Amino acid sequence: MKPLRSRTVRAIVVAAAAGSLALTGCSSNDGETKNESKTKKDAAAQSKPVVYGDAAASKGPAAQVQGAKNGGTINVFMQSDLTHMDPGQIYVSDAGQFANLIHRGLTNFQEDDKGNLTVVGDIATDAGQASEGNKVWTYKLKDGIKDEKGNEITSADVRHTIERMYSKVIFDGPMYVQRWLSGDDYRKALPDGPYKGKSLPDSVLETPDKSTVVFKFKEPQPDLPQALAMAGYSIVPKKADTKEKYDKAPVSLGPYKIEDYKPGKSIKLVKNENWDPNTDSVRHQYVDGYDFQLTIDQASQTKRLIADQGESKNAIQFTDAADPTQIKEIISKPEVNKRSIKGYQPYVWQMTYNMDKMKDKRIRDAIGYAIPAHRMIAQDGGKYGGELAGGLLSPTLPGYDPKYDPMGKVKNPQGDMAKAKELLKEAGVKKGTKLTYAYASAPRSQKQARVIEDTLTDLGFDVQAKEIERSAFYQQVGKLDNPYDLYMTAWGQDWPSPSTVLPPVYDGDQIADGAQNYSHVNDKQVNELIDEASKLTPEAAATKWEEAHHRLVEDINAATPVYYAKQIQLSGSNVGGVRYSVESSYIDINDLFLKTP
Image (cartoon, rainbow, N blue to C red):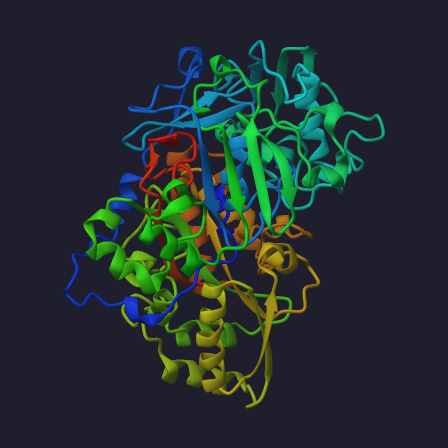
């Protein structure tokens, strides 16, 4: 998910860094409409263990969707362009959602109608065969996998996909597999990727024949099948790779391919005739294509889908949520409400401090105590957009502690200005001290920026609010030398484990341009706990993760938790197969069809 990164969200994700429009009017439950917002109980139901599927589970075609018909075009409403289309760059959830339509990887997540997840082989025959205590993983490729140009996909393409992740061409994608193979300084192992004829040694990555890929790790990596299911590890065919240019014109292995792309305006997808449903146990190809309209703001999306007229009957929201000011209308109208999907996202919104600039913990704590979390949630749909957060680990994670709230954010959602000012006085902060707050150019972020600006101004700071174009937000705050003091970020686990939250976001060994340690926190104790936990089974690692989490929140405060994210989206009345996806935390893009093509 992943910022709103994708577990895609996975990751996630993730959504986009930008977010949705919000006003405060919808945040209260006035008793006139039934409260249908999701709770932490629903979140716990989304944290079920993931199962690894065998060859039978990985064999296509995907299970038929009840009532599905073929034909027609689905309209997709978005308020801005995708962050990336090159798989290696995909880590934000809008691009992760898009990836399911055009990309394929070694593995993928298969989801049943109850939200149970199974990792299955995508272009591989199964989720992977482990040996030597999960240090060696072997994958066999399915027969008949081709790209949109009809070229056969072989192990050479898988090798190329992994090795290009080492090059400087790729700066914004996941780093799990590279680090597991070659360490934290993995780029040094293959600085030019595969582009100058060099390869990783067979002792690390072996391709003994055209249909076999063997990953060899120094430490056990039981989560590899889930990591490889991330959109960021989707296949880039060796013959098709155009390096930086690939981000604008990727080659498809999935059920759809790009026919036309007008940056910032539209994307038109049509059927990929070289996709074979018999090789795919996850995706369908019911509709003829998708028309992405990239200029429709959140309020307009919601208004059109509520009205359900013309082309809107065939439309969906992609990663934008319903406009908070119109949620009451959605919930109060049964014919509209039945076209909504609701779920608990894995994302935790947090105020992230650039610790290279904000070195005094008392100042970070002061800001953390002062943030009026309830007002921030109000800008994101109130009870339908989020829930007060006490920690940095989402309720969708196994072992979540609902009572953990060391800063009292849940108990005092309006913020504690008195305590904040006391801490600033103790730190000797002078009135008029400048602070630069960065935010994305999207309605929600803009509304929340006003809340933050007002709060910081009340604390006596001279606030310099800097707006960043939505699709470039995480790229900009991900630069080590970024000029900002603080910024709101969101992170969701890439699969249900703290190992996909604490290491990528808070491990000091992972500080680098394009990495996700946005606070630049580098604490010896946290680093050691992460290293220790990463070598243990999930059960044995739980106490280590908890200890690292508590130190980050209580002793360091590199990022103050603000709220846990929820989701509510709409679709048109002619769109069938609509359901909430636990895996993506959006409308499940794999099962859609038009009731009347």
